[in-house]
Length: 110
Image (tube, rainbow, N blue to C red):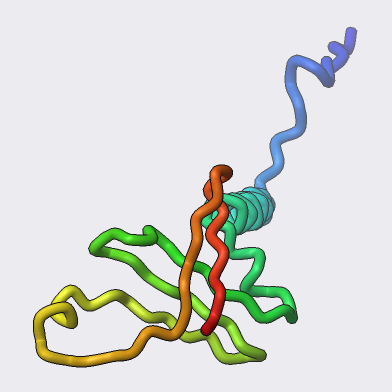
């Protein structure tokens, strides 16, 4: 009498070691795409990929304030220098800034 092999209890063993590597590659690609999407949404850098010109002020009024400006293809980063207050440099008034009740700041050039 012959014994039948049960497919569910004794599955065929795949001895191909490359199949495991292919599965790991797929998992790594999904993880990399998810990480890139998370970084773009977390740091709000989607503006960097648009064609529009913009200016972003990070940490306004604080010691580590940074201004990021994009004009065309050129991106300029300016970090505030706390030494500029007392080093004898002079400047001129170029406009006035007003802060509204809702927190919006309006700059009026002179």
